[in-house]
Structure formats: structure tokens, C-alpha cells
Length: 488
Image 1 (cartoon, helix red, strand yellow):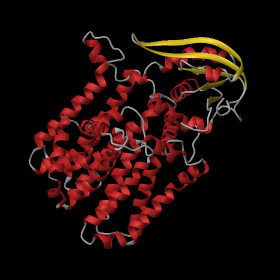
Image 2: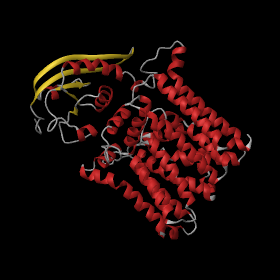
Image 3: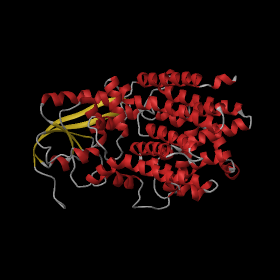
């Protein structure tokens, strides 16, 4: 490849084509929002400094996208569609400054074609801004390796703070940075300088409004984080560890995963190179931390997602340093093939004469909700003024997104809040009166018994596949009797 082919313009063209293909895939697949996407959309309609399970940056991005491009599905997903390519451009710059423009170019291409990014790129999540801000913070940190003035350290702190406002995983960046400083000659002296601590102070100042919001609401985000990581019930879970590790290899793709494993098996040699040590310091600690979480409880595969940033650059640099560009071409080509298979799977299955069903449709969680909402709509229309009530986060998220009811509420029979609806719109108190109650449960009596008047409106069923239906049962409920007392 000629040297000028590794310029930014050629990369921007490739990233633009890939982004358009992902947008076309979203439209062509005919998907509804995933539950978390509908959930985040609801947050974006009532911007605040915090939410039950996440900080506020993603809802702000969704609100900005919808203000600029309308209220369609693509506008909802646009932050993800755009932020991953921007992250690739930041990685290109990081690779160029660490090594050369060729490494930067291939690192960007390797990242944007990772199976992890191909999957995440189809729906909006907190990982999109997190990965961008982690990559940008790495670039700024590398530029400060020989020191810098307070403005540069303050900017780094601001980026870290914005990362924290995207997802608390960004807190690990500070720990990674401390390890990196200590790994350098005169590490303790570097850590004693004011710059790193100024960055920390600015990061905490950016996060402060979210911490204040949490304090005002009983720290729900911290409670939620403790619950999902099973901090109160730690034990040994080797099966979960293996599942997590396999997920990390799958996130990289088969060829790139082998390259990363080769680097990790010779990690001591790579730590001798300051550039390699830098990339490992911002990858390995997070991987080890989340692996330990998996071993002693629970860890989702994407919890260590920022680790792929440094590992992608490092794997590319090692392969090109060994004159193994052909292996790199195979790595990217293999991941492109995986993405193509992922994006065209429903079409491919049906073209082979195989019926698409619940067992072979990877997108089934994002199907059938709009049709279900259409079936629910007449019941809301028939009873104007009813509050849409449910005991299920997914049902509320999807129906509120699709129907935009005047009022909605969550059945919250005890003090244990399990989602943002329970925190902000619990039924009872300031939200009361007649309701349209919708439930997927087979034992709704615990709700029905708490109302004086119960009108059964029947079952609503929508066929997604032959063996997969969306089903809800509907009731009109009047005369709320209050939640049961303890032991009742």
C-alpha cells in the first residue's frame, strides 16, 4: 500500500461507507428499539443529572440527536452510529503518535471492524461515549508523558470526568494511569507532581452534579451497581470466568484474538518498550479487574470494553513490526466477514429456505414491540385519561416509547426500587387514579387484589415468529386500595 494511502482522508471515506452500511442495516432489518434503547429514550425526555442505573451523558446525546434529526429510530441510534467512527479516528491519531501513520490507520480499521463494535454499533448504549472518551484520554495522557502545564492536565481531567458521566467504568482509567506513571522511570516523583491530581480534581468536579443527584435520591446508581455485580454474595464462579474470557476473545475476532494472546504470553518483553507498556497499562488492569469480578460473582462481556482500544493498537503495531501485514489483512477481513454475517443473517437464513424463528433470530428481542403497541393503543383510546401501569421495565420502556401516553407508572409494591420508573414514577402517592394495567405475568392477582374495581380487557398477542409471540394481558383498574402491608 503506498504511504499516502494511510492518510486521514482514505480512512474517513472507509468509516463513512461503513457507517452508512450500518444505518442501512438498521433500516433494512426493520427492528424496534432494544429495551435499553427505549429506556434511554425515556431518560432523554426528562434530562437530569443522573438516572437509576447510569450517569446522564448518553440521554443528553440522544436528546441532542433528536433535536437535530427528529424522533425516528435512526436519530435514537445516531450517537452510536457516529461515535464509534470518531473513536476510530482518535485511535488513528494515537497509533500515529505512538508509532507511525501506518499503525494508526490499521489500528482504526481494526477497531471499527471488531465484532464487539459491529454488534454495539447497531444500537445505542453507554459504551459508545465511554470508548470515545477513554481513547481521547489515552491520547491526551500520552502527550503528557514528559509533563505539561496545568491547562493540559485540566483538559485531561475534563475528558475523564465526561467519561465518568457516560459510565462509571471510566473510574478505572485513573487507576490505569497511576500504574502507568509508576511504571516509568521516576514514577513516584511523577505521581507527586500536581498535574495528575489536578486532573483527578477536575474529573471529580465534572462528576459532582451526578454525585449530588445520587445523594439526593439515596445513591441508587451505587446500589444498582452493587446488585448487578453481586457484591453482597461473592463466591467462586469459574464458569462465569471462562464465559467472560471467551467473550473477550469473541469481541476481538479469531485472528486478532490470537495476535493479542501472543502479545499477552510475552508481556514482560513488551513492557520493556514504553509505548507497549503504555497500551498494556490502559488495557490489562481493566481486563484483570473484570475477570476477577467474573470469577467471584458476575461480569458482563462488555464491562471491559475499553481494553480493546489499547489492545487493538498494540496488536497492529506488533504485527506490522514483524512484517505480518498479511495476517493483519486476514484479521480485518475475517471480522468484516463476521459483521456481514451478523448484519445479513435474517436475509441469509430465509434465502436458504430456512424459516426464521426464535431459535435462529439474533434480533428477536427487538422485534414485535411496535406491533404490540399498535394492539394496545385502542385500549388507551377507549379510556381517555388512564395511566398506563405495568410491573415490568421492558413493557413500560417499549410502550412508553411507542405510544407516548399522557401518564405512565410502575407498580412499586415495596421499597426496593429496581429501575428508573420505580424511582421516578411509582404508582401511588402523586400518581393514582384509574389505570390500564398491562402485564406479562401469570399471577397478576397481587396487583388486581389491590383495586376495588377490576375490568378484564383480555389478552393481546402478536406473532413475531411461528414459535415466538409478544403477549400482554390488559385490565382496567379503579379504586386503588393501597399497597399491602408487610406480611399481608
